[in-house]
Amino acid sequence: EVQLVESGGGLVQAGGSLRLSCAVSGFDFTDICWFRQAPGKERERGLGVARITVRSGRTIYADSVKGRFTISLDSARNTVYLQMNSLKPEDTDVYYCAAGRPTHFAEPLEYDYWGQGTQVTVSS
Image (cartoon, rainbow, N blue to C red; front, side, top):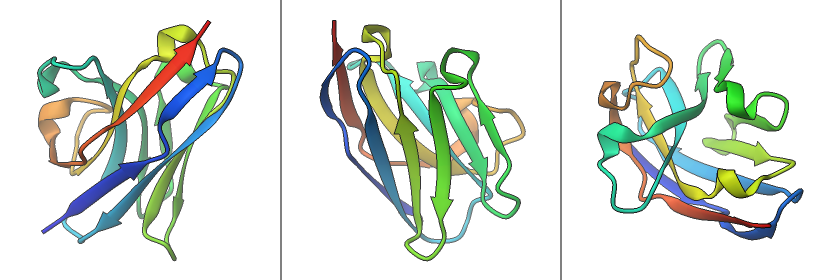
């Protein structure tokens, strides 16, 4: 069974930084992706933010976060990070990490395992 636990969300002013962590256990996946989603919305409507392929380390980013966010993997700690810099109020959302064997960048239905989410709030 794959389990994911996010941490690191919080309140930050515009222009600030946060680092989200996703502690992962289990092995039945090839990729981990960070999604964002407004509270109360269906998971299927989540928006992909950044994805990393575990074996190769290849990363993909949504256009809206390129140059500001960095996804990385610490294999020794079984943890995926999302470093978020130059944050904007429009980055405010609940952020989830998800694991799966996707064929597309960020199709939520292709990810079988999800964490509980962590709130990111950016004030103007």
